Amino acid sequence: MKSHTLKWKKQQLAEIKDLLNSYPVIAVADLERFPANLFAQLRKKLYPNAVVRVSKARVVQKAIEESRLKGAGLTENVKGSVGIIFSKMNPFELYGFIKKNKGAAFAKEGQLAPEDITVPAGDTGLPPGPALSDLKAAGLNVRPMGATIHVVEDKVVTKKGQPITKPVASTLSKLNIKPIKIAMRVSAALEKGLIYKADVLDIDLDQVFNDFVVAHTQAFNLAFNIA
Image 1 (cartoon, helix red, strand yellow):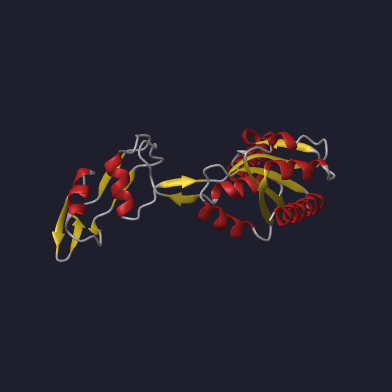
Image 2 (tube, rainbow, N blue to C red):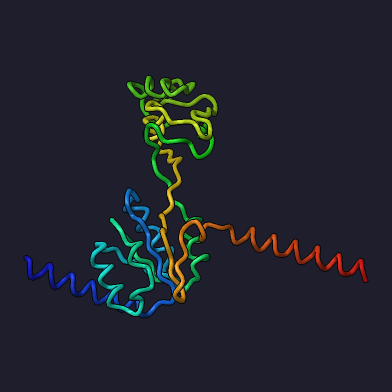
């Protein structure tokens, strides 16, 4: 068993070293508390512009130190449950892509609502019984209609920025409503010897481009008017 594990670790180390030497951009992601199903979805979306490997921090650190990136400063960002992203996109494009492709998750008691959370009117598909009391406890106007419970009118159960209560979290789960948006956390990215931390990468490229266009237009108009 130990021999098999050692062989697997060596193979993984060799693969990560090869990827580190093959891709121009390397990013480190913190996978702590990031749901496995959302990770699998994001992994598919990233391909073929990026590939992701998951390994223990020590294996990744060793691979970095034995690759062309030794001494580049990436090792210190490899901690805990880590994912290494090997990409052809520049760091800002990669970070923006990951940020835009957030996954949906069920709410937990105490989490803050990212937006107003609304339960729409309609058939819940739930049979009358204990669920009726649970839905009412969340503040919903509900009534049995035929074999199922119906929500009579749209209801905002939690305002943006407010903590989600236990009855609301339970109700949202019963209704299969996932109001929490989760993005994989990229802690740092490396390109051409430069390390970019998350606070630097977290910019809106579309907004930057629009600002550039506006500034260019204003400069052109000013020059035209002066002429």
